[in-house]
Length: 249
Image 1 (spheres, helix red, strand yellow):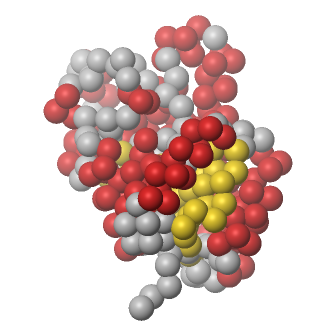
Image 2 (image 1 turned 45 degrees about the vertical axis):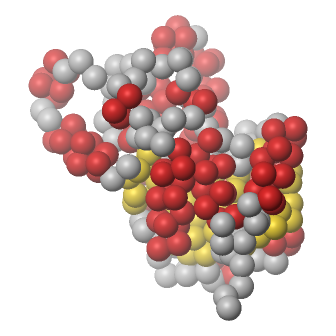
C-alpha cells in the first residue's frame, strides 16, 4: 500500500482549493493548509478530517507578506515530513471599473494574483528541488490567455502568472519537480457571486476540483478546466485584433 500523499495547499479556503482538498481527502492524504481567515480555515480543516484527510498543519497568514513565504513552506514540509504536492490557489477577482479608476486597487490585485503567487512558487520550488521530487500547481485562469475589456486587470495578472509558471517549469525540468499551470474558466464559487455570466459557461466546483486533482497526480503541464476552454481560448487567441475588438465578450 502506497504512503498517503503529502499536500500543501496555500489559499486553502478558496472554493476551488477546497474542492481539490476534498479529492485528496478521499485518498486519505496528509494535508497542510494555509489561508487568511483562521476561523474559516478551522471549518475547512474539520470538514476535510471527517472526509478522511489527516490535517497536520493549519496556519493563518496573509500571503502578500512575502517575507513569510519561505518559513511557511518550510513549516509545512516539516509537519508533513516532505512535500509531494504544493497547490497555490489564492486570488481575488477585482472590480474592473474600480481598478481602472483607482490604480491602488489594480496594484493590490496584482500583488495578490501575481506577485505573491510567483514568490510562493519560488519558495516551494526551492524546497522541492532540494528534495528532488514533487508537483507544484498554481491556479492561473483562462482570463490570462487574451485581455478582455471587462476583466483585463485580473487577466493581466494571470497572464503574467502563466508566463512565470512556464519559465519556472522550464528551469526545473531536470530537478524532479513538475510545474502544473491550471487554467479554470468561470467556476461556481463565491468569487463570481453577483457577476453576470452565462450559466452554461459556469462549471461545478467539485467537477473542477476532481479534474485538477487528476492533473496534479498525472503531472500535466497545462490544464484547462473544463477542457472545452482549451479550444475556446485557442479560437479567441487566433482572432485578428480588429475582429476580436468587435466581439461583445
